[in-house]
Image (cartoon, rainbow, N blue to C red; front, side, top):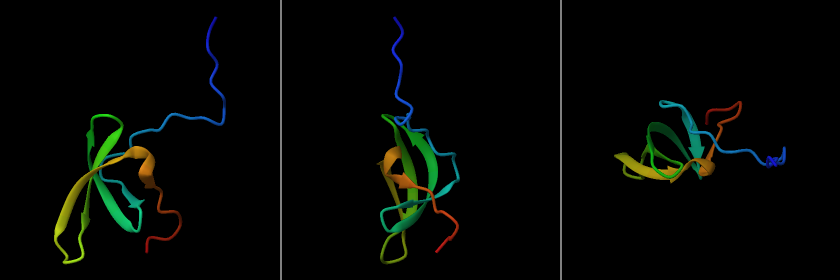
Length: 68
C-alpha cells in the first residue's frame, strides 16, 4: 500500500543560487547548495565585511514585497 502525504506538509526546496532571501534579521544571498538540506549564504557582518555561513533551507524566508 502506498503512503499518502498530508497536503499541509510539504518538503522544503533548495532556493535558487543567487536568490535574495531573509535569514533572521539579515538579507542574504544564496551562493551554493550544501549537504543535509542546507545552503551556503553570504551576508555582511556588523563591520561591513563579507560573511559566509551555512544554514538550513527551512530557516530562509522570502523577502516578500519589500526589499528593506
